[in-house]
Length: 487
Ligand SMILES: Cc1cc2nc3c(=O)[nH]c(=O)nc-3n(C[C@H](O)[C@H](O)[C@H](O)COP(=O)(O)OP(=O)(O)OC[C@H]3O[C@@H](n4cnc5c(N)ncnc54)[C@H](O)[C@@H]3O)c2cc1C
Figure 1: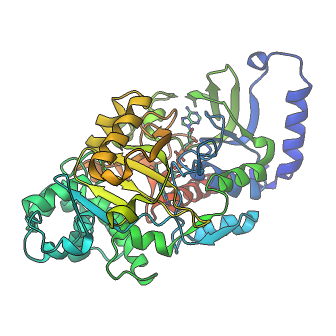
Figure 2: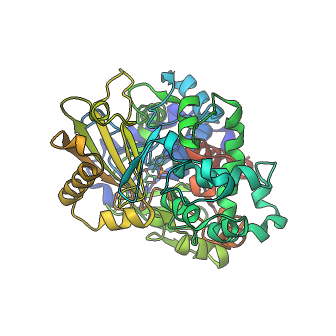
Figure 3: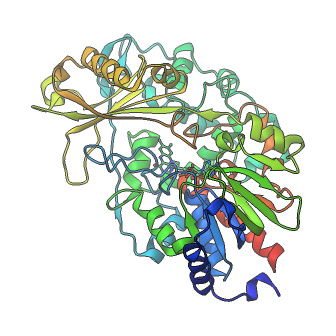
């Protein structure tokens, strides 16, 4: 019988639950639970794949290591102001994310936390954005001089990106651009200070250890955005924020709704430790001793944690190398509450700060209810690594003292409400994948090929999209691969 002709998802789920719940045996001694497809990881990519397959009548089991779904979509419900630790902005052209919200009745609202414009703190000195071009600390040259420090990389991408199609980055001729971003910027004539500033704002290890290709992919996709909203005088992040939407009540509400739709097929606290494909199908073991069997499996686990899972037969060649070596970028955050009179009214500068010091940005997000009583400091790259070396409490203290140094009008007005580090967060190990130079050519094609009955999803396997939409894009691709084989 074709998998696609099987009884409906809901009927099968009901049966499976009754068996497990009715048994008095410890779960570890139970026979492996069977389904058509096992999906590992309940972020947007895994959940999207699961919904597609379930809608086709397949029985899916989603195994999620954490005690919540969503992965890098994580609303800090336990922190003052419910900040987003991860994804928040739903781009204007995120068709899959918007369709999913619509299908599940999850409310979206236009706009997202606008964190810019910035005041710039360069060499410890506060500079208004309108003063940057003529400022004595602006050592950039030529056309760069009028570009804000936060926008310098975007300026070069906008000027020299040779790509037109969203998949140009994967074409064989693109391999010549699989070089360090820093090398390309130097070839294009970036100034010494321009290079330092580009490095400062980069969500990657640094300009020498990230492939230009991966950034060109994002820039090409980002061009779609330039028609949306008002781009005049705004940097890429501000423009994106204004043209985007957000999930009402927090981004986590969307993956939660996806999991509810899937019902008991989503299993939490299931840390996958081994994937065995020596038999007919796939046998997946979890740390708690439970086992799951299926005809096919999809891994939507980032490569950081996926490295720790034993896969038999082993991955080979460039696919194995990609899993072992794919770098992940850093993003560590300190969330704060503001007390007293608005500090930006006292110092007369824009409230958010972009700095070349030990922090990257200190944003003052606008609450959706109009409130302006929060701050978040974000460190990426090497700055993030350094901040993460401190224990969480000291991290908060360091950030507050640094903000007070840069913006003395904040003194005594900041209370730390929470810290969050993506590299240190269980089961993720970084904020996003970040191909090193040469790795797009080596890995991008091979690493997403099915390995026996195991298929690959996750934002790290994206082709055309970015962010949450790329996670859903990847889940869709992996689900279609399975459906084709299952037919
Ligand atoms: C700080 C930050 C800001 C962002 N902002 C935006 C934004 O504004 N807009 C946007 O579109 N995108 C944004 N993104 C990107 C977006 O969050 C991600 O692209 C997307 O959520 C990734 O989804 P995923 O399913 O590929 O991976 P994940 O969400 O990471 O899901 C992977 C899942 O696998 C699970 N897992 C790991 N190990 C195991 C194991 N052994 N067994 C079982 N399960 C396991 C994890 O717990 C996790 O739930 C942001 C990301 C970050 C970090």
